[in-house]
Image (cartoon, rainbow, N blue to C red):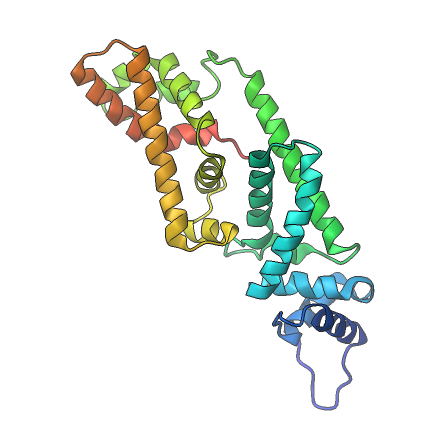
Length: 276
């Protein structure tokens, strides 16, 4: 922790970054000792070149609301680079939200990734590079998913179809209709609203808490919880409807099938929504 004793001269690098930051972002509140610690980690040269950006990144890492709003505006600007990879609005929005979660939401054990910004270049450019990297990973994951045959028993939940549910009757039903079960989940997942699909991926694959998902989207935790539950409900309902349309089953088997979809949904999605 940074402490300046009475009469001790201020570190010139910290002072420069402090002056630049408070001038550029007068609405941002940041304890000077936190900025000093940030500068000490990343070097005085960076503070001299991009002091205001270091100030903003440090304040964002510590959760200052005004700083987060400024970074959100920069992330919107960074989205222009994502459009060069895929201009679909849903893709751009998901990339921005994934980047926001990665940069601004810590995991409790480590600070948010924006704390790693070292000021070697403008923060805007650093965010742009991060946005492109996120979009490229998403695009590669999407291409890999398209390359997987829909009837490949070893991919996209083939192993899941053979995993035990703990209920012999459900296990038998799943083995008998493994391909249809997998195809219905894939189709239902593809048809899900992008924001809901992203929330589920954050929750089930990235293992973010409801609070962290809410922070990523800038909404209350109750809203994030509703989104996750709505995504689960819609997937279960759509998958069940597709299976009813495609399979000739008795009423009893249909009831068991509904239970199967519910019981296997989270496990299935951990395979159908790979980390991007």
